[in-house]
Image 1 (cartoon, rainbow, N blue to C red):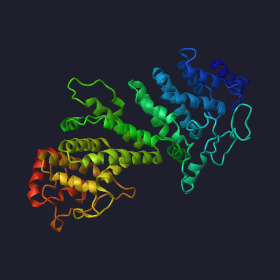
Image 2: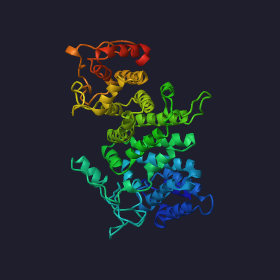
Image 3: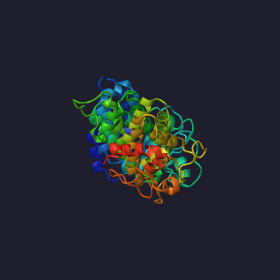
Image 4: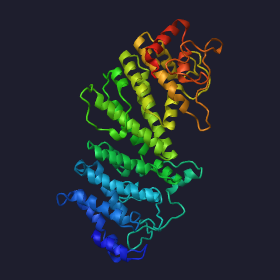
Length: 475
C-alpha cells in the first residue's frame, strides 16, 4: 500500500491527490488500522501499525496531518502511550513520535491537530476553532466537510483563540473543561513517558525529539504549545519525582562528590565504587541538566513557562521546606543538594529564577532581623552560616561561595545585576573573610556570598575565615 501511494504521488502534479490517496482518506483506512493496533488483533499488529504510520507520514510528501481521517487515528495511537501493552513497542512509538516532531518543525500549524487531545476522539467538539493551511472546517453542527475527510479553512486564526488573544495583548481565556490540558495523553505526554524508558536509546531519542518540538521558531506556535499542553508541568513534575526518589539518608559528602551530570550520558552502568543512592542522584541531575538544556534551546515563551514551573514546584514546593526544617541531617542534605543544583544550572533564565528563589527580588541591603521586609529563605540561610553546628556552617558557606561565582551571570534583560546592594557592615566596609581568597572575588560586594557574610558579628568572622581556608570556596 505504501509503495503504491509513493509511486502515485510521483506521477501526480505537485499538490494534487491521486485516486489511491483519496480512497485511503475516504474509506478511513488509517482509522481501521489504528483500531486494530489498539486491540492488538491479530497479535503483533500494534508495532506494524506504528511502523506503517511512521512510513506513510515520512515518505508521502503531500500534507496529511491536517485531514481529519489522518490526525484522528494519529491521536488514537498516541493514546496508547498510557497502555501497559505499550512497553513492548517503545522503539516503534519513539520512531512514530520522531516523524510527528519533524513534521511539526516543518509546519508548526500542525500543533493544533496533534495537541487536540481526547475531545475529538470522544465525539466532542473542540473548545477552539481549528484550522489548516489548506482550508478545512469543523465536521460537526452542519459545517462543510470535504469528500476526503478534511476540515474547512480558517486562515485568520491558525492558532486558535487563546494564542491569538495572547499575541494581541488581550487577557488569556481560561481553558475549558474540554481543553487538551485535561487530556490523558497526547504527543507531549507520550514523549515524557518515553523519556522515562529503561532503554537508554529510546529515552535519549525521546528527549531529542522533545527538544526538536519545543524549539519551534514562531511566536504563535510557542504560545499555543504552552497554553494548550501540560509541557512545563510535566517536565517540572518529572524533576520533582526524581528529586523525591533520592534517599533521605544520602550522605551530603557523596552528593558534593558527584561530577557534573550530562543528560546524553544517562543510564550508564554504575561504577564499581558507587555509593547508596548514586543511581537516584545521577537520574535527578541528568534530568536537571536536560531541563537546563531545554531552557537554553526552547523558544523564550516555552523557556519562561518551564522555568516558572520548576521554580514553583521544585524550588519553592520541595527545596524551600527542606532548607527551613530544623533537623540537622535534613539541613545538611538539602544544602548539599542545593549546592549541586547551583553547580549544574547554567541557563540564564533558570539561574535567574534560582537566585531570586534564594535572595528575593528586592535590591536593598539586608533588612533588620524579623522585619516584614526580610526574605524568609535568605534570612534562614544566613543563620545557617552562624549555626551551632560547624558542619552546617561550612556546608552553607560552601553553597554561598559557589552561588557567588555564578551570580554575575544572572542578569535581568536590561543588564542590571539582581543584587548590587552593599554589605550591611559598619560604615559599609568590606567584611573580613569576604575578600579575594581561593578564587572567590566579587564585583561591588553585592553578591550572594557577601550578603550572607555581611550578617556576621565580629566573633563569628573567624569561623568564616576558617570555612574559606577549609575549602568553602573551591577553585
